[in-house]
Image (cartoon, rainbow, N blue to C red):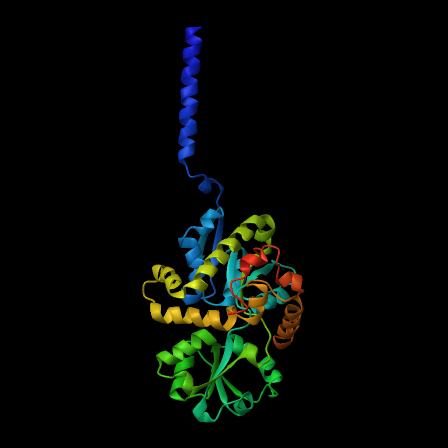
Length: 350
């Protein structure tokens, strides 16, 4: 009897010891879902909310192990997510439309949170060339790389502003040369993202007073901009992970909007060579131009207007001469979004 009780006591002690050892292992690591996330571009100001969510543990609190990599363009981000190299990413929703149109049999990829309520594409023209309106661009030379959204969507801009598509002469250039060519006067105008080209031009000695800036959304081009995207396969297999990612990102975005300068510190942690003042301004310009809009003030950040999305898809299919036209349901899903009240990051009264 004594022997049996002693044996039981030893077994109980061993079991308790094993249980205590397990308790010392952080439970979140046992349940973490890995997500490889591809940005559209380098670690710059607009990447702040993603990096903040990672560094402050917001993704981890949702049971996610997120790896964020810099990118080299929206098309690359979309392709890498669709291929399965990355589960999620950040890219131009128009690149998603194009990918789906050219790959109707899959693999699929779709937007789950639209961050840029309008395309950041804009025309930057020299005022000293007599360019004050879109009509003044006729006969002028515009520089841009072939993958630039402004270049690719030019036909829509021209049609909305009573210009013939061939009214201008295009010069296809490396993106690193674009602003320099305009500054030197080698071309009359360029197209580029508002918050990128403007800062690049200022660094080269041109001010806003020297420029006529025509943002595509303000000149009749209603297409969307960048969105968080997910592969169809990953979203179907792990819908709760996509939901958790968006909750964590939305939480960080709210803090980023509240204090852009503090948010850029998280970008600096990933790339110590950035100019924090420049990147803070880039982030502020992105917020002011394509995140804080009348639609997001009324409806919250992240979602789309169904009618506008349908029109945007048709427009992109037309100007890109796509072989098929994907449906709105293929392009974007709102099922993973945080509640509308949680996405109400701006006040209509402000």
